[in-house]
Amino acid sequence: MTMRAEIERLTTEHSRLLALATTLGRHVRGAFPADRAALDDFHGVRTQLRNQLIAHLKREDWVLYPSMLASDDARLAATAQDFADEMGHISEAFSAYSRQWLPDTIAADWPGYCAATKGILGALAQRIEREDSELYPLASTVEAVDAAVPAAAPPPVSFGAAGAGDGAGVARG
Image (cartoon, rainbow, N blue to C red; front, side):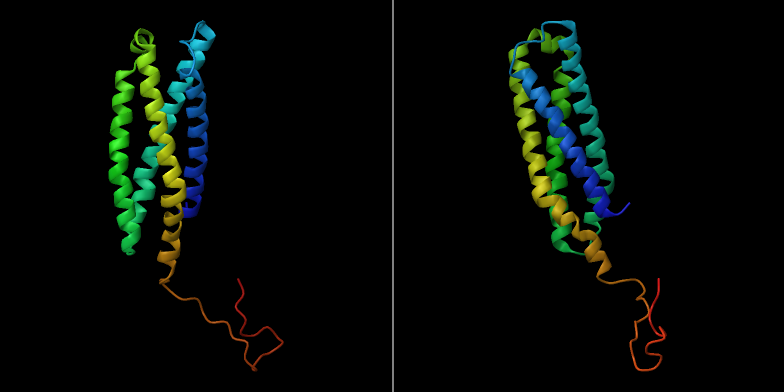
């Protein structure tokens, strides 16, 4: 898959994560889910957000950052390293949040859970905004940088007098 396609995929994942975060945000602005259906919906959203976020972070770790870090462009590599280092802290914070806030803990301290969730969702939204506005546009140049020095140049196209009009010397593909 090309870097451009990976970035499109990651951006689509960002949209899904933000939609789930918005739904979870609505839950934490209200009272603890009163009935079974609302409680199931709440826990379902939490699970989807966690699972999709973990998959997204792995994709960035396995595809995006290695490509950028391997670039000969110092700015690309440095930016990737900065984002990767920063992401480690956010990832650790989300893991700690997930371990702390289990269903029983949430039920016992709904206001505490709501406050913690608002904080983690805010950090996630800020991170997504920075990736979409800074990291991904820069990452999309990885292919352009790599393509700047092609491994083997294609044969030149000739439009000289010899063979003019008969298609000779025109590269076809």
